[in-house]
Length: 312
Image (tube, rainbow, N blue to C red; front, side, top):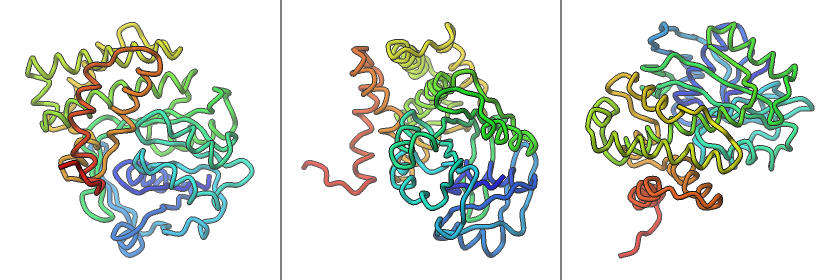
């Protein structure tokens, strides 16, 4: 398959590297120091699943020069998706599908608005990875997996081919019965991990052992389950409890990418994760007091990171 990795960070670098190593025709869309490193020295991935290096990879900062793709894996930050969708238009052919692997729920609709609904899919991934240096990705936690699907949940040929490509690369891949339910399940995990981690400024191994922030996490998980149900998405009866168990299984030093961005003073996915829970809850008439508080407390820092002038 011809696969474009749009955004070569911890997620795009890892999964794109695995696919390229398995022989797929992969082009990395990158810029700046990352692009320079990819074109000069290739891609290095340090992983708990096995280290590897690709001496030569296809990489460009110009999507129009990459040609038509079968699949575009959208691996930018959630708040960058609308801009990325505009930029990737030259790579979209008659049967191209763009699959978002970032956090949040709104990317499929944003891609559909720009590329057309027939070119937008649903997706999610699980991994703890980050850029160690340009051209160098480190994977430190979670056995990586992806879920992909058509937005109408039909079992299409292009989705099956993508699943097979991931599996041939040694990545656990599934086409769930309901991709929307799977994306809500992912939001349940990542929004709790991101929200509590960002508020406490501590890794999971610290806050999950303290009664007070742990109680906040448990309550936040229940809020998302309630919002999902009000919007017609029924999660597993024990979804909240299983989310906390999953966080308990993470390495002690685990942090979410949103938390790391906030700690580094960078723009983050605050609005796409916590803000989405607040907005969707309000629209459905479901109270979300924990997420309301977390979002409000973190908002000044987010706006400062985006260069906005704060009152006073």
